[in-house]
Length: 367
Image 1: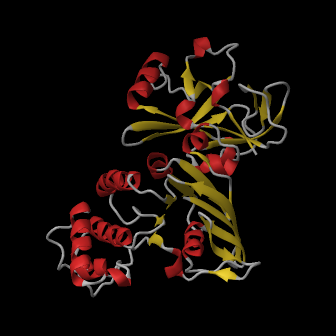
Image 2: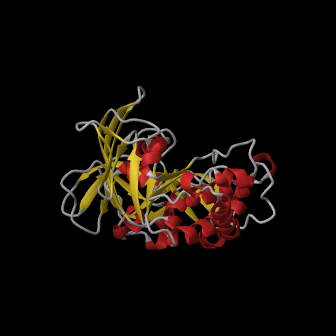
């Protein structure tokens, strides 16, 4: 089913202005906390009313400010999974599931058949008489999802569905949810601040920043070729410099004090470049001279993470202090760092300088 959203709502701290389309599959809405992601879902579901705009699902107009159309939530047939799951605390699992059935389906025989089917599908057997407070976070989520599917929604709206779960349970439920979504015929909107969740679960993604949305693009495009600094930040890039054109396919990185060569033609308008931490390579001093996009840096700090080493650097030509964009973060395996230090005798000589190289294809030119 095709969803069209073009709405505006003044929230006081900022104005929500979001416009996007979703046509089947799973579309992610990626953004930091407080950027308007959840508010967008609530406007689609009819819980909140936009100031102006239009919301339409497969030919049915949910909201149109010009035509004075504003369907009630129950008329929209939307399945909204809240962050806290919104189960009725004084009801049992069976009673919560009963609440998801439409009025005409609540005769005892048909209701029992439908609920039993969902209990089996969502692995809730034996929990029928439990109340939400007696369930784990994962069990509560499965009850909430089962209730939504019982209502036979035309579209699913999932608001940070894994935010309350620990990492192990999150991974398991993510796989289960992916299987469920594969069998859902309608469109799904999946809201998250986690780029990893968006990458694994969604087909397409819309980035939201301070209430403003970007056009929907394939998920892999966001991570491979983001167009804006905001999108690059949300996709996980941590190295940025202000930049300007310095010739054909060349940019001058103002914060790093170096001129770099890019792989393709430069866009007409840009003001930053970005490079992902794990794409930057360490170069032996003996091989650095004359090598493209290679320059010297001062080692500021070496941080040992659980499975990797993070080296914080300051380019020799960096302007100003060592904070913010004047620094470069390089991430690699512990083995790679140990081998490099041994070969270059960094620890023995207490060297505080190092050479790094950025591939021309790995430099993102951003607006």
